[in-house]
Image (tube, rainbow, N blue to C red; front, side):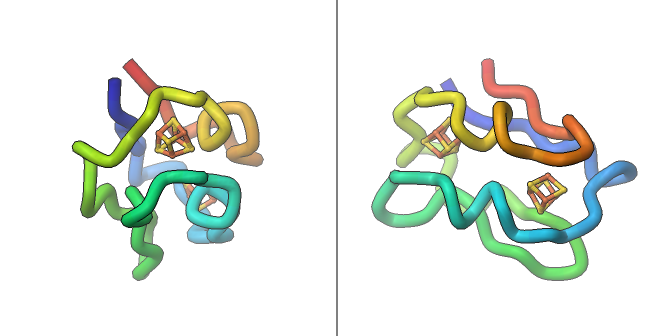
Length: 59
Ligand code: SF4
Ligand code: SF4
């Protein structure tokens, strides 16, 4: 499991990084959310469930 970000819709709010419990963080927020540590993802779905524009899919 890992998240995929539809960057066209991302508003860079940072919520995905804030709610992600993984260490190291899976996301970095630049002009868009970037997946920088996909192997750290536990598949908890918090990022997908909290993204305000529904642009994350965990699969
Ligand atoms: S929560 Fe969604 S909109 Fe916000 S930075 Fe993450 S991917 Fe982008
Ligand atoms: S599914 Fe959970 S662990 Fe994986 S990136 Fe999203 S919030 Fe982080």
